[in-house]
Image (cartoon, rainbow, N blue to C red; front, side):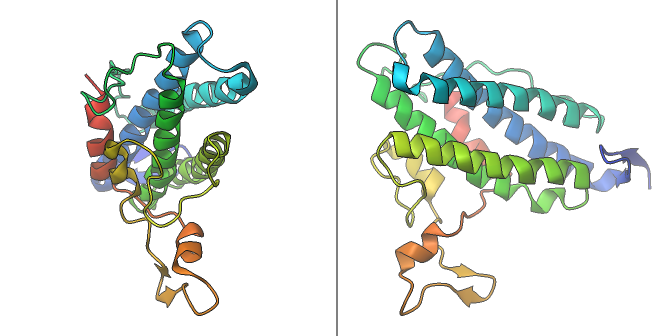
Length: 225
């Protein structure tokens, strides 16, 4: 069977390449979405609160850097990196009239929370598909941790807990419920973490559940024109 090199230098079976590339591409689309959200917010004069500018500057820089790394990972696997999409942050009507305008700052922060929470589950969801490619797997595992920190920071500046409870989308728009569906799982492996001393809410808070490539794609597609 023909092989191509992976980033770690070990050959990657051609039959698994499609799954690996699909996983990396969906993560690149998500990184573009997150990066563009922050870029537009920061470019709008006076839009981002001065007290939160450092947070969103940092998130913007890290998401932009991640796009470049994902492009390299895809290219070294003989794939074609995702071209930058054109985005519609109204989500084709899911977030009506949102345009980074005066009075819409809280909507921006809500979108940031939704997309960062999505990122945590999206990165975890690609782990299985990348088992054969240790170079890509190591990157995705590292970025899963970074996404967790992003999500926690955004949630806290919105006055929320730094983690998801059950499948609650908090006060986010209805479109976001798909991001949180299935997060109320309390069984990990064969062990039900919920018990007489650990509530179902607490058990669900301790773990993030994966989202598949198809699920992530369905969530972000309305934001791409």
